[in-house]
Length: 156
Ligand SMILES: [Zn+2]
Image (cartoon, rainbow, N blue to C red; front, side, top):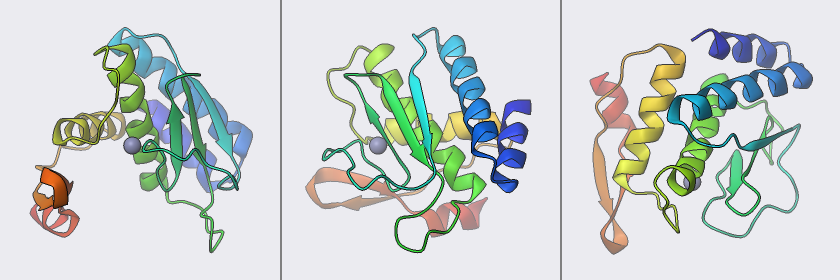
């Protein structure tokens, strides 16, 4: 997808206004594709001091179902390094999937289920035009699962 390339070059140039524009294009296209209302979006230079104290907060982004707003940030909190393009795009896809859970599937909550991660991964690979990887899983406490990244990456 062309939009992902716009985003990548904007990130490399560290031009936040261009990053913002590319993110907006991406989210508008994704909302259109899934037939849901577009969500709001903020691109921040660095991780905000106050992040929402709930489960939708990730390392590089968050989503509020009340305001339908995605926030993503370009720099890590501790070392202030620029987030890699892959991580940034994958965060954007992840947060958009929370939006989808509420808007398309009408869920009252959006959980990090295996299905959720599968949808986020599908969107990510579709955006980058890369082949979908088979995800490998490890069980964690409470009957939940996380992606086994070393194994998933080895298999690719
Ligand atoms: Zn999440």
